[in-house]
Image 1 (tube, helix red, strand yellow):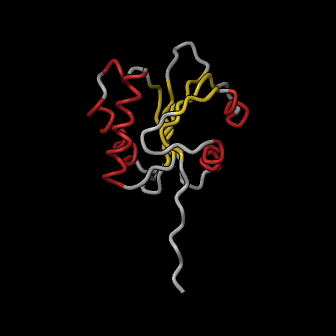
Image 2 (image 1 turned 30 degrees about the horizontal axis):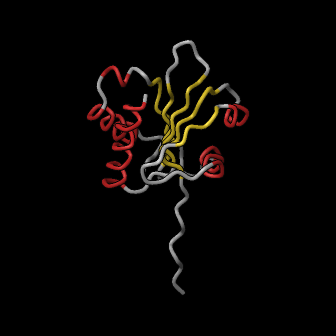
Length: 134
C-alpha cells in the first residue's frame, strides 16, 4: 500500500496544479471481506452531481496506477465542499503538502454509521476566505 500512497500523493499534487486546491483526499477501509478502500474527495471545483468530475479523478488514477493498484479500491465518492462529512474531517486533522496520516477507523465509524477499519488522509484542509475589500 505504501507504493500506492506515493502514487496517490502525486495525483493529488497534479490535480491541484491543474484545477485548484483539494479540501479532502482520503481513503477509508471498510470492514469488508474484500478489503478494498473507498476514495473520498472534496474540492470546490468538483461537482458531485457531474460525471465529468468523477472522470477527471478516474482518468488521473488510470494514468498513474496499474491494474493491480486499481483493484485495491471499491468506489470513488465526491463530496460537496459544504457537506457535513467534509467539515467533520477538517475538524479531525490537517494534512497538507506531501504528508499522509493513517488514522484508526473508530474515529470515523460512529460518524459514518458503518465500521471503518482504517483511514489514510492525504489532504485535509480548510481554505481561508479571501480578504474582503471595503
